[in-house]
Length: 113
Length: 111
Image (cartoon, rainbow over all chains, first blue to last red; front, side):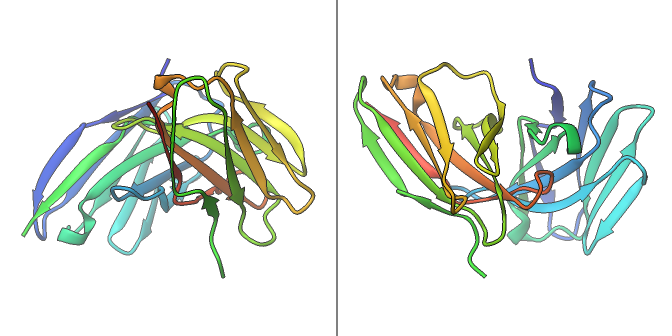
């Protein structure tokens, strides 16, 4: 039973375009939502994370939007670059009570030059 | 500062064998978690240790076990290997548990 559902499975975007990845969750006890970037043969690297007390968080070209009532959150990659081509995973955990990360299935992003 | 380190990088075993994977967390981090990532899927939680005590266990058979040492390093043991155990095994380090930093992983191939 996958606790975090991620879409799309893959996407192709032109250089300079916007990549949007969506995630949805059911467990309202989740209170920490990180995004990870993974290149082939490497471990996931923490990209950006958000907690439910804010609706948006921006770090450079990466923005997380969070909708608590809809139990959805998304990653926007602005001005996408070929170096952003990777697999992106959303995840969720219950923070101080249970740090286990539940991951989405991943989205493979390809940025065309 | 050194990140999370894992050894070995790659490993090939045959069915029925036993394997031990090792992880050293970021200096100062007391929590280590283990995840299994099958090709094309997201990581799946196996264990979490904090201050040498098991804090969580995922839905994996008893063939999987782990421990954390006084220096906070950790090892994951898998007995009676099956073909389906072939995966990238990831170790994640955190200071208190929530923000987790992953190592490069150990690629295990079971033949």
